[in-house]
Length: 174
Image (cartoon, rainbow, N blue to C red):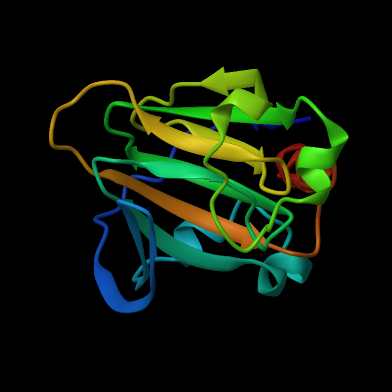
C-alpha cells in the first residue's frame, strides 16, 4: 500500500513554528522541518501507549516540491494544513538493477527508469498515511510561487497497515 486517506480532519489549531530542527536541500528543492506547539492535538489520533514512537514535525516544502526519494522512516501520517498545488506521486523501478543501484540517501533523478504507480492531490484539512519506504516525490503541478505546509507524525516503528489498525482501535474505543 502506498497511501491511505483517513476519514478524519486536521485539528483546527493555530500552527506555531518553534525551533527549526532540520533543513534538507536536494537539487533545486528545499524542505524545512520545525517543532510545533500543540503537537498533542495531532498525536491524539493514536493510542497513548505508542505516541512516543512518532516524531511530530511541521514540514515546509518550497515551490519546487521534492524530487523522487525514499525517507528514512517507514510511514508518516500527514495532516495537510496548506497543501499548495502539489501532487504526491509514487513510483516503481522499471528494472530491478535500477533499484539495486539507487542510493536511498539522496534523490533519484532519472524518471525514465520509473513507472508511476499511484498519486494523490491533498486538499486543506486532508489526512493521509503514507508508505515512506516507497519511492515517491512531491511535484508542483502549477508554476506559482507556493509552499506546502504539512504536519507529519513520522515513525520507524510501524507500517501503514499497522498505523491504520492503531487508529481504528482509538476510533472504536473512543
